[in-house]
Each structure stands twice: as C-alpha cells, then as structure tokens.
Length: 353
Image (cartoon, rainbow, N blue to C red):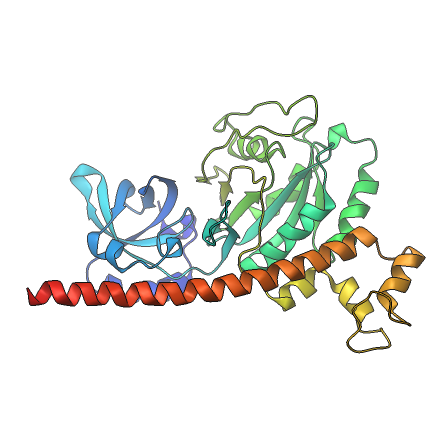
C-alpha cells in the first residue's frame, strides 16, 4: 500500500517532516472503537493506542484521533500493533456539537476532500435539514455535493432537484438509484486515487447501500426503513473508512438525527443563504430587523412568493444558534485553559517530590 493511495498529500508531508527524522512512521485511522484504532500504513494494518504522554497532553476530544486522521506511529511489526505518538494537522474537519446538554465537539469526518450530503427522495426529504448540512460542510473545508438517493421511489425527481437547488446555490446535485443503477456513473469522478469522500446524512438515507455499491460487496448491513413514517433505523453504528477497488476512499458514517452546529460564522451562513443576505442589503434601513419596518426587501420577497417564509425562519434560527454557541464556546475555552495549567502545576509538583 502506497501512502498516496490512502490520501497522503504535500500538506500532510510538511507536518510529518520533523517526526520522520525521529524514526517514526505514519498511518491513517480507518476505524475507531473505544480509543482503539485500526490504522493503515505502508507496512500494512495495525491496532493502535495513543501513548501515555499523548493522553496527558490532550485538552479536549478534538485532540484525539478520529476516523480519517493521519497519525504519527511507533510500530511493533511482530505484534501488528502500534503506539500513536502525535496527530498530524487536519486539512478538513466536519464537526457537530455532540448530542446532549454539554458543549463538546464530535468530529464526524476528518481529512476528506468531498462531502456527499445524502438525502433520500422519500417522505424523509427535508430542505431545512439540508441547509444545516450545507453550512457545516462549507465550514469543514471540504467540497459539498448533494446526492439524492432512492430516485426510483420519487414520482417527480426534477421537481425535487429544483427544490434542492433553491437552497443549495451552486452546489452540484445528483439524483441516483442503486436499485435501478441510475445516476451513479456521475459520482465516479469524485473517487480517484487518494481522494476521500465522506457520506453524511440521516438514518435510512441510503449511505450504506451506496457504500456497498461502491465497494462491490456487502460490507455494510442494511435494514429497511420503518413503514409507518419512512424513518431509517441506525444500521451503521460507527464510522469506517474504506479503500475502493477502483481507487479513492469512502467514509461511511452513522445516521445523525440531531445536527447542531459546532464551528461556523456569519460568512459561512451567508454562503448558504446568499439569497436572504442579498435581499437584506436592499432594505431601506441598514439595521432592518425584517419585522414591521417599511420598505423591507425581505418581507416584500416573502409576500411576493420569491422567498419562502420557512427558509427565512431557518436563517434566523441558525443565526441565533451560532450566537448561543459562541457564548458557550468562550466559556469552554476559559475552562480548558484553567485545566491545562492545573495539569502543568500537578506535573511540576510531582517532579519535585
């Protein structure tokens, strides 16, 4: 296995230069299970754990390896095991706020070139959810592509594509059916040697079905969606990175029922809501709140039917969510800094003893 087949590039090579001089090797995390990692290298596959020093120096979940990451290793070839000494800088990262009340990051996909935002053309189709995925995809540093699956179940595919294009300005949109094997050839251009594509979407969207098709074998277990509401069951329960026989890599992920923003800013939201922000620039008052002000271009567009009320409300909701997250993140950063110095102080005291 050559590193470039696993996605190695010049950016990663620059980060690894200092470690290479120390005799370490490098590998890519293909699977994570309770802090045990399956890592692929030029010398084959290893089971790896982080070193004690690495664990001591970590400040948050973000500091630990995730599927798709490149890690610095000391190999124990005879045991087919390795120790992770360091994490190389990521060139892209798709994150969400972890489910629950705590403000913690969950890294969904790392070091990917393209993000396939997968949504099925059945009753689970949801333009508002897609808006969230797009914001997070742009923020990740990867290129978003929208893949509408189960086209064989949709009576008016062109109408659905039009609905998606209205909220995904400039983003490629493909409608496919694995069952009928239609539209899939257009996706092949994204899977070239060393290029990584992550599949993201809710349960039942068809990510595992698409993964199996790309692999040419049944690697992922597939279950039928629930008949009463077309909601998917959690078939894939962990993230895994696969090498494709035709070249390239695909990262399959569990379905996400809850998708809260993690890192994003006004510019990223503006990129996904260009239509709303362009209208806001046309308002008579510079500080227009788009409520009852006269000559409000946003309200006029809503009344005229050129802007959906639901899309505008989604924009407002996301702006509020970002403001709340920023306040929480600032507090979290303060606590992390306090914890770091506490660790340093404890270590210094133990050395004196």
